[in-house]
Image (cartoon, rainbow, N blue to C red; front, side, top):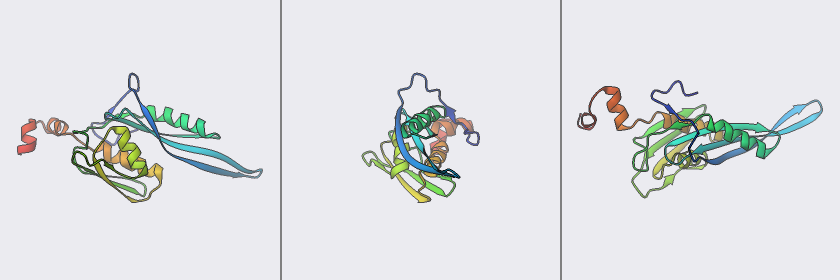
Length: 174
């Protein structure tokens, strides 16, 4: 699912204590010649609050069933995100569809300054201090995917040093 990103570490759900957060439930309608058929779609984010996170979508005629399907889907798409002292390593932009997300590292004690869908993803990852801005679409599906786009582009100093084939000191001292 995350082929376009380099160095994405996918994670198996076994042995992890995952917590799920419901981002949104939408009632959807299919109009047929017999009338309207109602259903529900749910988007869920699961994470261990220690750098592992995934998102999933579930659809069903019942809300609880849609949420259960979404949680199962989210567990199939777990990835590890590099974190530094409770925040992200660097500023990063993400986009998906009409949604644009800007994530900025913050000093300790700032808290998670984020709205709805972005907050759910960042808390599931385990970020404690971050500034964020949602620009463009506020559709929760696209905002979650844009937030994942930003998170998957994050690189720790160790990753940068390894990619460049130089020592960690040279990354900072150039």
